[in-house]
Length: 373
Image (cartoon, rainbow, N blue to C red; front, side, top):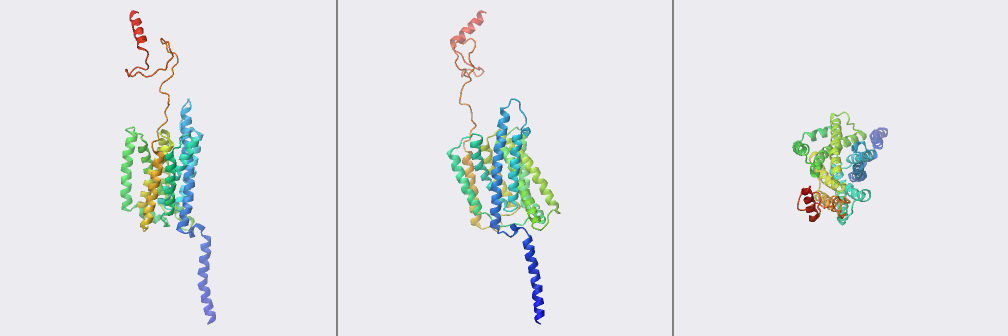
């Protein structure tokens, strides 16, 4: 009887031992608390955004150098520009890994780190002016980042192929996708046909593509993480569809963003791009991945309040940014024929078509001498 009991207890212990062995073979981050995974994703996102801010300023500096050259060469032939693209790739890789650990609604707003870093780098690297509003805006952005991390939605969602298929055919996402497509076609028409290259149009098109990038990056990164943890996802076709969407949207997003960087200052492009990108990413995360489902009302309120503080901070950084113009209101042409003095030539106020003004007496004498001839 005792032997039978001992055999039974041994049979009960065998599955427990095997489960412990399997748990030790699994990756360490699979057993982390959702708050710990959010912290890991936050660190990866902050590192990636700092690299992206450096990349944008390097690209802007390369455009400035190309404009100063006598022979205009395309920007894609510049080694410095490709260095900026390489840094952007490394930063995006950090963000890609962050989406595998933290929700998209948390990773996307952390782009305010890129705004703060870009404002500091542009002052040193591009010799732009640091104002008091930049300091105040940076402080608000830091406070908003703290609220975002503190009140983030601590829900660890397992991303699998069948779950992505269900998300795609859901009616809220289909409506959202149709509205985005219509808006993108209108903006592309204004940009291509009407020649409107305003910063809002360029960055809106970039943010629309960025929302697809966030959805696809979250799907690919989550499925890769699930595969590493033991649940292979590479056999699902949706993985490769999301991979193609991620690559394509990134390429066209960089194109529109680079066009804006070429025409406007980095301190203008980065804050506005952050606001548009964060808004579209949060909406995409809420609609597609339903990341606010089951969250506490206080967490949602404080999270959105942190987003508003970050938005206010970046608007203060971008406020009243004007292009630098020459302080000299005239052109020094040197000595002018038929004029005794070497005064500066200024545009005539009476006649729009005149390129310069001379004294009335000399002008009448010249006209009389021409009549005599």
